[in-house]
Length: 295
Image (tube, rainbow, N blue to C red; front, side):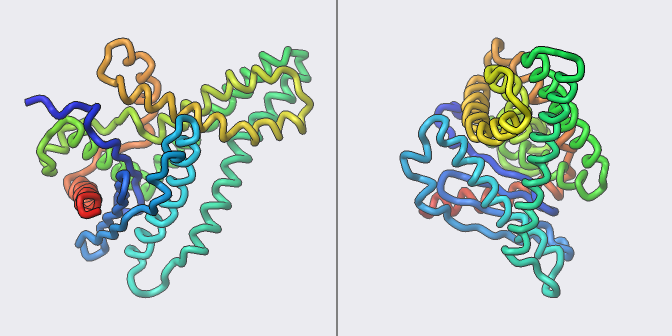
Protein backbone atom coordinates (compact mmCIF):
# COMPACT_ATOMS: atom_id res chain seq x y z
CA UNK A 1 0.00 0.00 0.00
CA UNK A 2 1.48 3.40 -0.90
CA UNK A 3 2.29 5.76 1.92
CA UNK A 4 0.54 9.05 2.56
CA UNK A 5 1.28 11.97 0.25
CA UNK A 6 4.43 13.89 1.15
CA UNK A 7 2.48 17.09 0.61
CA UNK A 8 0.34 16.27 3.66
CA UNK A 9 3.10 14.98 5.91
CA UNK A 10 4.75 17.10 8.58
CA UNK A 11 8.44 17.74 7.97
CA UNK A 12 10.09 15.94 10.88
CA UNK A 13 13.81 16.08 11.53
CA UNK A 14 16.33 15.25 14.18
CA UNK A 15 19.89 14.41 15.01
CA UNK A 16 21.95 11.77 16.75
CA UNK A 17 23.31 12.30 20.25
CA UNK A 18 25.38 10.18 22.62
CA UNK A 19 23.69 6.75 22.63
CA UNK A 20 20.47 8.31 21.45
CA UNK A 21 18.38 10.31 19.03
CA UNK A 22 16.64 13.68 19.13
CA UNK A 23 13.45 14.06 17.07
CA UNK A 24 11.97 17.47 16.32
CA UNK A 25 8.51 18.30 15.06
CA UNK A 26 6.79 21.63 14.51
CA UNK A 27 5.56 21.94 18.10
CA UNK A 28 7.58 19.47 20.17
CA UNK A 29 11.01 17.93 20.57
CA UNK A 30 11.94 14.60 22.18
CA UNK A 31 15.25 12.96 23.06
CA UNK A 32 15.55 9.22 23.74
CA UNK A 33 18.77 7.77 25.14
CA UNK A 34 19.90 4.22 25.89
CA UNK A 35 21.06 4.34 29.52
CA UNK A 36 23.94 2.22 30.86
CA UNK A 37 21.38 -0.18 32.39
CA UNK A 38 19.93 -0.64 28.84
CA UNK A 39 16.67 1.14 29.64
CA UNK A 40 15.48 3.94 27.33
CA UNK A 41 15.19 7.34 28.98
CA UNK A 42 13.06 9.95 27.20
CA UNK A 43 12.94 13.71 27.62
CA UNK A 44 10.11 15.44 25.76
CA UNK A 45 8.97 19.02 25.81
CA UNK A 46 6.95 21.46 23.69
CA UNK A 47 8.80 24.00 21.58
CA UNK A 48 8.54 27.68 22.36
CA UNK A 49 5.79 29.61 20.58
CA UNK A 50 8.44 31.58 18.68
CA UNK A 51 8.95 28.48 16.53
CA UNK A 52 5.39 28.87 15.22
CA UNK A 53 5.59 32.55 14.27
CA UNK A 54 5.00 33.49 10.65
CA UNK A 55 8.41 35.18 10.34
CA UNK A 56 10.08 31.90 11.33
CA UNK A 57 8.59 30.33 8.18
CA UNK A 58 9.64 33.02 5.68
CA UNK A 59 11.81 31.73 2.82
CA UNK A 60 15.55 32.26 3.40
CA UNK A 61 14.87 33.58 6.91
CA UNK A 62 13.68 30.15 8.05
CA UNK A 63 17.05 28.65 7.11
CA UNK A 64 18.78 30.88 9.65
CA UNK A 65 16.10 30.13 12.21
CA UNK A 66 16.51 26.38 11.69
CA UNK A 67 20.30 26.70 11.98
CA UNK A 68 19.98 28.52 15.30
CA UNK A 69 17.24 26.14 16.38
CA UNK A 70 19.44 23.13 15.63
CA UNK A 71 22.28 24.61 17.66
CA UNK A 72 20.12 25.37 20.71
CA UNK A 73 18.12 22.14 20.67
CA UNK A 74 21.25 20.17 19.81
CA UNK A 75 23.08 21.55 22.86
CA UNK A 76 20.15 20.67 25.10
CA UNK A 77 19.87 17.16 23.65
CA UNK A 78 23.60 16.52 23.85
CA UNK A 79 23.71 17.68 27.49
CA UNK A 80 20.81 15.38 28.36
CA UNK A 81 22.38 12.38 26.62
CA UNK A 82 25.79 12.96 28.19
CA UNK A 83 24.31 13.23 31.67
CA UNK A 84 22.38 9.97 31.20
CA UNK A 85 25.66 8.22 30.46
CA UNK A 86 27.39 9.83 33.46
CA UNK A 87 24.65 8.76 35.86
CA UNK A 88 23.88 10.56 39.09
CA UNK A 89 27.49 11.43 39.81
CA UNK A 90 29.23 14.23 37.96
CA UNK A 91 26.80 16.05 35.68
CA UNK A 92 27.41 18.48 32.83
CA UNK A 93 25.55 21.76 33.22
CA UNK A 94 24.13 23.76 30.34
CA UNK A 95 26.79 26.46 30.69
CA UNK A 96 29.57 23.92 30.29
CA UNK A 97 27.98 22.42 27.20
CA UNK A 98 27.32 25.89 25.74
CA UNK A 99 30.97 26.86 26.13
CA UNK A 100 32.05 23.58 24.56
CA UNK A 101 29.74 24.04 21.58
CA UNK A 102 30.73 27.69 21.08
CA UNK A 103 34.40 26.72 21.16
CA UNK A 104 33.70 23.97 18.63
CA UNK A 105 31.88 26.41 16.34
CA UNK A 106 34.80 28.85 16.55
CA UNK A 107 37.29 26.10 15.67
CA UNK A 108 35.07 24.91 12.80
CA UNK A 109 34.80 28.42 11.37
CA UNK A 110 38.55 28.83 11.56
CA UNK A 111 39.36 25.42 10.07
CA UNK A 112 36.68 25.07 7.39
CA UNK A 113 35.87 28.69 6.51
CA UNK A 114 38.89 30.93 7.13
CA UNK A 115 41.82 28.54 6.61
CA UNK A 116 40.80 27.65 3.02
CA UNK A 117 40.40 31.38 2.33
CA UNK A 118 43.96 32.08 3.49
CA UNK A 119 45.34 29.09 1.56
CA UNK A 120 43.44 29.99 -1.62
CA UNK A 121 44.56 33.64 -1.45
CA UNK A 122 48.20 32.65 -0.87
CA UNK A 123 48.27 30.26 -3.84
CA UNK A 124 46.38 32.74 -6.02
CA UNK A 125 48.96 35.44 -5.26
CA UNK A 126 52.03 33.20 -5.64
CA UNK A 127 50.89 31.77 -8.99
CA UNK A 128 49.42 35.00 -10.32
CA UNK A 129 45.97 33.50 -10.79
CA UNK A 130 42.79 35.49 -11.25
CA UNK A 131 40.41 35.92 -8.32
CA UNK A 132 37.98 33.49 -9.95
CA UNK A 133 40.51 30.64 -9.96
CA UNK A 134 41.61 31.52 -6.45
CA UNK A 135 38.03 31.36 -5.19
CA UNK A 136 37.51 28.05 -6.97
CA UNK A 137 40.64 26.63 -5.33
CA UNK A 138 39.45 27.96 -1.97
CA UNK A 139 36.18 26.06 -2.39
CA UNK A 140 37.96 22.86 -3.37
CA UNK A 141 40.24 23.09 -0.34
CA UNK A 142 37.21 23.65 1.88
CA UNK A 143 35.41 20.64 0.41
CA UNK A 144 38.43 18.37 0.82
CA UNK A 145 38.92 19.48 4.42
CA UNK A 146 35.27 18.81 5.31
CA UNK A 147 35.24 15.35 3.71
CA UNK A 148 38.62 14.38 5.17
CA UNK A 149 37.60 15.49 8.66
CA UNK A 150 34.31 13.60 8.58
CA UNK A 151 36.00 10.49 7.21
CA UNK A 152 38.64 10.64 9.95
CA UNK A 153 36.37 11.20 12.96
CA UNK A 154 33.96 8.58 11.63
CA UNK A 155 36.61 5.96 12.30
CA UNK A 156 36.63 6.73 16.02
CA UNK A 157 34.53 4.10 17.87
CA UNK A 158 32.42 6.58 19.86
CA UNK A 159 31.71 8.74 16.82
CA UNK A 160 30.92 5.66 14.76
CA UNK A 161 28.17 4.77 17.24
CA UNK A 162 26.75 8.30 16.99
CA UNK A 163 26.74 7.90 13.20
CA UNK A 164 24.83 4.61 13.63
CA UNK A 165 22.18 6.41 15.67
CA UNK A 166 22.14 8.98 12.86
CA UNK A 167 21.27 6.12 10.52
CA UNK A 168 18.51 5.00 12.90
CA UNK A 169 17.05 8.51 12.88
CA UNK A 170 16.96 8.55 9.07
CA UNK A 171 15.46 5.08 8.82
CA UNK A 172 12.68 6.04 11.22
CA UNK A 173 11.75 9.19 9.29
CA UNK A 174 11.99 7.33 5.97
CA UNK A 175 9.65 4.65 7.31
CA UNK A 176 7.16 7.24 8.56
CA UNK A 177 7.17 9.12 5.26
CA UNK A 178 6.59 5.84 3.39
CA UNK A 179 3.57 5.00 5.55
CA UNK A 180 5.22 1.90 7.01
CA UNK A 181 4.47 0.34 10.38
CA UNK A 182 6.82 1.92 12.90
CA UNK A 183 8.28 -1.26 14.36
CA UNK A 184 12.01 -1.90 14.51
CA UNK A 185 12.00 -4.87 12.13
CA UNK A 186 10.19 -2.85 9.45
CA UNK A 187 12.14 0.36 10.00
CA UNK A 188 15.42 -1.55 9.61
CA UNK A 189 14.60 -2.26 5.95
CA UNK A 190 14.60 1.43 4.98
CA UNK A 191 17.68 3.32 3.73
CA UNK A 192 19.85 5.20 6.17
CA UNK A 193 20.13 8.20 3.81
CA UNK A 194 17.63 11.04 3.75
CA UNK A 195 17.34 13.99 1.36
CA UNK A 196 16.90 16.58 4.14
CA UNK A 197 19.91 15.51 6.18
CA UNK A 198 22.17 18.09 7.81
CA UNK A 199 25.07 16.51 5.95
CA UNK A 200 23.36 17.52 2.71
CA UNK A 201 22.99 21.03 4.10
CA UNK A 202 26.71 21.21 4.91
CA UNK A 203 27.77 20.00 1.47
CA UNK A 204 25.35 22.43 -0.20
CA UNK A 205 26.77 25.36 1.77
CA UNK A 206 30.30 24.44 0.66
CA UNK A 207 29.32 24.14 -3.02
CA UNK A 208 27.27 27.34 -3.01
CA UNK A 209 30.13 29.19 -1.33
CA UNK A 210 32.24 28.72 -4.45
CA UNK A 211 29.64 30.51 -6.56
CA UNK A 212 28.81 33.27 -4.08
CA UNK A 213 32.42 34.04 -3.14
CA UNK A 214 33.47 34.11 -6.80
CA UNK A 215 30.96 36.88 -7.48
CA UNK A 216 32.84 39.14 -5.06
CA UNK A 217 35.84 39.41 -7.37
CA UNK A 218 39.38 40.25 -6.17
CA UNK A 219 39.71 41.28 -2.53
CA UNK A 220 42.61 41.83 -0.17
CA UNK A 221 43.02 39.13 2.47
CA UNK A 222 41.38 40.88 5.43
CA UNK A 223 38.25 42.02 3.50
CA UNK A 224 38.11 38.55 1.98
CA UNK A 225 38.08 36.92 5.42
CA UNK A 226 35.43 39.34 6.69
CA UNK A 227 33.26 38.74 3.63
CA UNK A 228 33.34 34.98 4.24
CA UNK A 229 32.07 35.41 7.79
CA UNK A 230 29.40 37.93 6.85
CA UNK A 231 28.05 35.76 4.02
CA UNK A 232 27.55 32.65 6.17
CA UNK A 233 23.90 33.62 6.96
CA UNK A 234 23.15 34.15 3.26
CA UNK A 235 24.70 30.79 2.35
CA UNK A 236 22.74 29.07 5.12
CA UNK A 237 19.45 30.59 3.95
CA UNK A 238 19.99 29.69 0.29
CA UNK A 239 21.25 26.18 1.11
CA UNK A 240 18.22 25.48 3.30
CA UNK A 241 15.80 26.46 0.53
CA UNK A 242 17.70 24.22 -1.90
CA UNK A 243 17.50 21.27 0.51
CA UNK A 244 13.76 21.83 0.95
CA UNK A 245 13.29 21.89 -2.80
CA UNK A 246 15.28 18.72 -3.46
CA UNK A 247 13.58 16.96 -0.55
CA UNK A 248 10.13 17.89 -1.80
CA UNK A 249 10.82 16.44 -5.24
CA UNK A 250 13.17 13.66 -4.15
CA UNK A 251 11.11 11.00 -5.94
CA UNK A 252 11.24 12.81 -9.30
CA UNK A 253 13.70 11.30 -11.82
CA UNK A 254 15.05 14.72 -12.82
CA UNK A 255 15.97 15.47 -9.19
CA UNK A 256 18.00 12.32 -8.58
CA UNK A 257 21.26 13.62 -10.14
CA UNK A 258 21.08 16.69 -7.89
CA UNK A 259 20.44 14.52 -4.84
CA UNK A 260 23.20 12.01 -5.61
CA UNK A 261 26.17 13.97 -4.11
CA UNK A 262 24.26 14.73 -0.90
CA UNK A 263 23.16 11.12 -0.46
CA UNK A 264 26.67 9.86 -1.24
CA UNK A 265 28.08 12.17 1.45
CA UNK A 266 25.85 10.47 4.00
CA UNK A 267 27.82 7.27 3.54
CA UNK A 268 30.40 9.04 5.71
CA UNK A 269 28.03 10.36 8.39
CA UNK A 270 25.72 7.38 8.90
CA UNK A 271 26.30 3.75 9.83
CA UNK A 272 23.93 0.81 9.72
CA UNK A 273 22.20 0.75 13.14
CA UNK A 274 21.32 -2.36 15.11
CA UNK A 275 17.78 -3.05 16.31
CA UNK A 276 18.44 -1.59 19.77
CA UNK A 277 19.42 1.73 18.18
CA UNK A 278 16.30 1.77 16.02
CA UNK A 279 14.19 1.16 19.12
CA UNK A 280 15.70 4.29 20.67
CA UNK A 281 14.94 6.34 17.54
CA UNK A 282 11.36 5.04 17.55
CA UNK A 283 10.96 5.94 21.24
CA UNK A 284 12.01 9.52 20.49
CA UNK A 285 9.74 9.71 17.44
CA UNK A 286 6.67 8.39 19.30
CA UNK A 287 7.25 10.70 22.26
CA UNK A 288 7.55 13.71 19.96
CA UNK A 289 4.36 12.77 18.09
CA UNK A 290 2.42 12.25 21.33
CA UNK A 291 3.49 15.66 22.63
CA UNK A 292 2.49 17.32 19.37
CA UNK A 293 -0.90 15.65 19.47
CA UNK A 294 -1.42 16.89 23.04
CA UNK A 295 -0.67 20.53 22.14
